Image: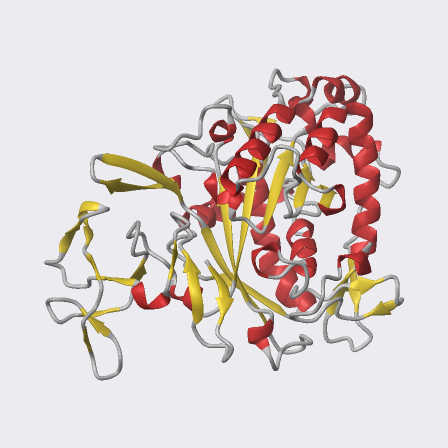
Length: 449
């Protein structure tokens, strides 16, 4: 992850590895050998291509390995895991998504990225594309499963659970110690024709890195020196906590009278305030913060499965929270409306699960907490013949899943700093439909409150 660019807008001055979170200078970046005989790496084992610091270069500047092959793939000098080249060229934004087992994180993440691929270029004149397609392979599989349905729109589809081992993690060897690191997903976010900064894209372009962890990784005692799978949260520009009302006993009693959803009548319950408190404890430890000090980055509470509990809000149907700018070249995000909905959702949570709100507010300044209703599927699942809950591909209608990141990208620049957001938003103080902030401007959170 880059967090500082040069004054000329070229290479960044410092990179943070998105895998092990070590800071390093671009000139110390390793290359991945390309020759088929150069297998065996100190950190990654005998089946991986060797990493090296180049000393020979082609006349066009390409690094050459010891066999004379041109090399293009880059790696971190500490963990030796691959680092996308785009991280050397623009600032980055870490986002961590976490929640209890069965809260629907993977469904939500797949629906979120699927919607953003359409909404950002169509409505906001912003490109949203894969920065590293290979690194995003798991997420591509999620999207294809849910919204492709294997070519059969009537097929029952479901996602496999995020595991604490396997494809979601990469193993690195430090002598005799084996350390697993979670795989981040990488996206490029940059303005295109029609955006207010189309002629100065470097000012607001970002590389978005999203982390997803198994819910079990946040159980007390799960994070250890030899298993640091959630330490990315301390580096994140924002944290997205997926809260599932159908797992809360008080909510379930109420929802059972409002919905026939099988998730309300099942037996899945979880102490989600304990998980949130554990996440808060870890972040403060990793950041070196005293227990009574608030974390200074935003917390987005994604209140999931909105299709089940939407009757608890006075307005059950949520319109798209954006509208066309007067120029008709891009849209502006109605952050004032999002924050109004947030206040309403917060009041619902205070009534039925007050411990979630109090735990969140003891962790982060309440002014930096937003509660957003979302549904990855827009409808209830069915019980498949294999005993697993699944959804009809043709019936999937995600609700507000793109809104959390739209809000964050409107209010925050790289590394969660206020100002410098790429999404234009509405400023109710000036009653203007305009870009809510400009790069390097003073913090403007108040403009959208």
